[in-house]
Length: 216
Length: 216
Image (cartoon, rainbow over all chains, first blue to last red; front, side):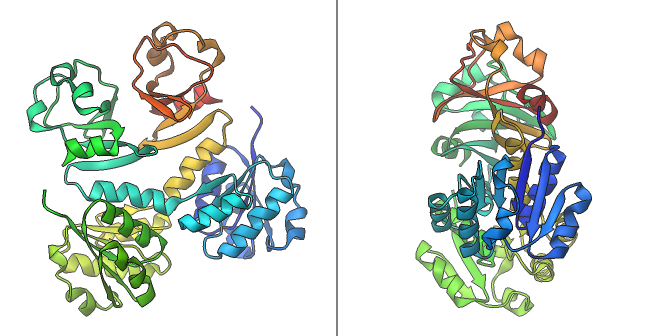
């Protein structure tokens, strides 16, 4: 497969982690930031870097924007700049523009002005933690698709020693068991004859309302 | 179940989203920030708020820290303050301290100085996006547990029209099919007789190396 190439604008904490992860996935990366130190920091990862202010369209024009597989707008603090850069990138023929947002209103305007995908790390992670923290019985909660989550829960007392079939788990609770967690060990898709065990956690996939019903 | 109670320190973007999500999960919430506007912003969510500088231990002492189910240290920008507050909270008997980090080195020091759980939104989300962006065939990638992900992939051409059993999917690829995605529709745990279909995506659970083998 051909190596993918990406432009990352803004080397704050998010841009930095993204750059590192893309480098680990063997992509070709160009980074830009106004601050030369922020650019120098990531050069050891084997990426190319340039110092420049991307709110100036001529700086963006000097890259061949249309040749990147995707461009990432990662500056966190100045929303006007993010919006302007996302919009310039689209004008310059970017194939795909990702932009980071902190609030719903930012997400909305970024989508209207050139962003194909809005990245929303703080909201996503906050929701996940809030669900887990608000119940003694949810140990982790992974967003799956809209309103569907995978939650790590303790089996109910009345299930112990019985199989998934005996409990009539799927029909009764409208949930599916995706995995069983024995300490750090994960056994995926345990099957209908799995016997619920006090020492194990189960990872269930389902609507958040159905998860709450078994986890509270 | 008894209502859970939480203290959130720092009403930046992450603190704000956390406060909103915990409120939706029917928890009792107290927020603190140095900035009165940031506190006023979230009062309509039905939470209590105080203006104060939590790097002053007397401010923290004025709350009964040991009565909260957990305390969240959410300030993003000043690491020294986060560290100091996490450490004070533990000294004051906090049951559980969550603290937000931007870098590995911060995570390490927070854990050594009072944080029970380190929250790392930008790193988590960056990794997830990097894996999906670096392959044409991965549409989403959800971190499951250490090095295990759930990836949304297109079925390989050679699987089409055949069942999971025929393909010998689990043994051959060391992956499990957690769900089938038909547009926005999700069918969980499709079972051994599911027939791979060109128009559908499958969500597979497995080690990132095994996922890469089928997704590239």
